[in-house]
Length: 307
Image (cartoon, rainbow, N blue to C red; front, side, top):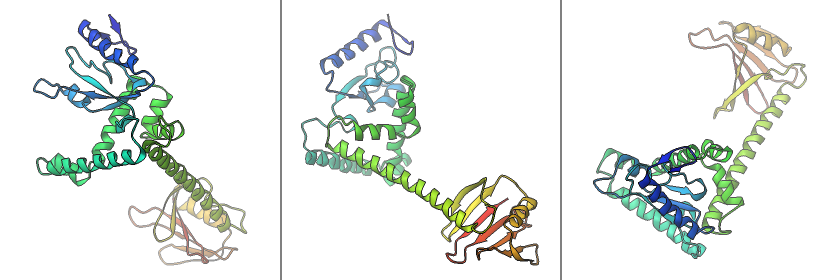
């Protein structure tokens, strides 16, 4: 009797089938790190094997019955061992040859989707979107199966970040340094780092600008406020935990405006010591909340807080 890591007991046939495939791992240990599921695509194929057909997994996460054959009694699935992960490229290819193989694969994929574009609605959508959503879904399903087969901090984190862990691993610890896969992973990792840096820098710039808006006052109106988005017209939108016209007026007068006046409809306007303008919109229309707005006359940027 063979018991998998997840506690699943294999039948005698499954055990023989599993050991036959596992034996091939020892032959190529240290060389091959990925495998692709190959199902028998005939009239006897089941839904389980059809769903696994063509899926690529890392060898280290192989788990019989979960992401490694056999998936059920009398399973006929086998595996194809790959030396370069999902790309399936042999190790003796040069960078240019790898690039040619990748471009050829993209071209053949476009041709295949074009041939099936009008055979079904699903085929049309796959052709219209260049297969991107389908590829993302299949990759996510593969990461899900790996996480369920061997849950740990890496597989869970890789699933939650849509494969970012694998990207950084491929960039920092490549199977083949300077290969096409290494360059692609490095480029994506650098993009993620740069985007994260810009997001942090953007948030810090917002905080610095907020501080400059309140210069000359003892109150920072955006403390404990949540930034939501910036519109194309230079309006920075925030939401306040405190709700209602009373909370908006409290923040308004805490800024110590002068030359305040109330306009028809309940709008209150004032000037700040630093030369900026502050006002309150009561939001008396149905579905609208009161808002406090601070306008920077020098830049035209407007801070808008909804209460």
